[in-house]
Image: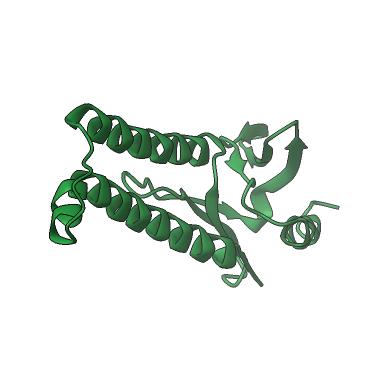
Length: 164
């Protein structure tokens, strides 16, 4: 069984591309405002301070948008048990630059438990594995980009591999 949030990831990529296109278009409009109006015979022009202000305002709004999405810890998470010997978790942060790809490959016979924690803005998956009669805990995986249905499917998958 494969569980992944590629729909959210695709929509997120489209939103990022569209917002970047708007930033480029609007900043170009303000930077070339005088030239465009002069071509149409309009004598009103923006001062260099107004042009700088509007351009910086657009880039600031875009920067806040990018920073907010970065803080929400949206991850693409791909979970599969098709190997029949391992549960494989592949995930990376959904951002434009500096993606770090991670993989957890847990043998099914050593899988101990899992825990999904939810607080005000974050949902995280904690995985536990048996290692030499002790329990090892993996760093958490953010599930903020998962829908409730995908979280439920993931819980059903992981419950089927809990030791009896």
